[in-house]
Length: 289
Image 1 (cartoon, rainbow, N blue to C red):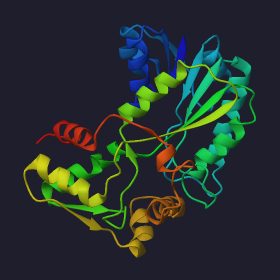
Image 2: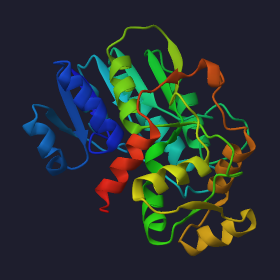
Image 3: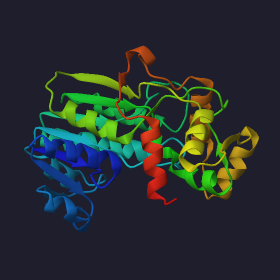
């Protein structure tokens, strides 16, 4: 039995589908049992638990071979990342109570970066979980290709996509969520000792300009990228309701300046199978032509 958190999302869903296809039993860990109904119909057992509830999490993780842990993103954390620290402490306590055989934690590229930025939330959780004796794989994927879902509407309606990734001709490490889920499921079925890091990206890094070119091809209309001026980011994010935009800004700086990178470099990362064009085509079709 494998316990999967985040099963209602893209990555967690792909983890579950891959395991079910391999005839492995799956326990879907959800906050609302009603949201797990579809997975129950596919043969999963359901467990109700919240990442803030140690006892419920421990019960959900009890008696399983492996646990996939996905922490929901927090783009506007409080200064000092107290939310991540609380989640880390809860996770560690629950895992040490349940004692699963192994854990795959979905972390991020750049979790080892020393500069303060939004991704430090995963750094904090990794550091706490590393204190546990349970075998843990920290899966660190690149920038999600599916982040381009926000680009579909401006590409179609205006032919211009605003880009925070800059310069526009700088290649960016990216990966499809389906590759992340597939690899996570494969890792869960492995056996290892101690703690390890697996870094994951697609076979080819792509530039924002190349993303625009793919959208142009898919939509059959000219599409260009337009860099959003760095000096406008803080006021823009605050106008969107963010209270503490600095961590997000610094994360973007990290990608743009190159200090958010894989610990083992591009040569040391595992490579996914899904091409960016495949993902963008799916996003375009999903949002209607």
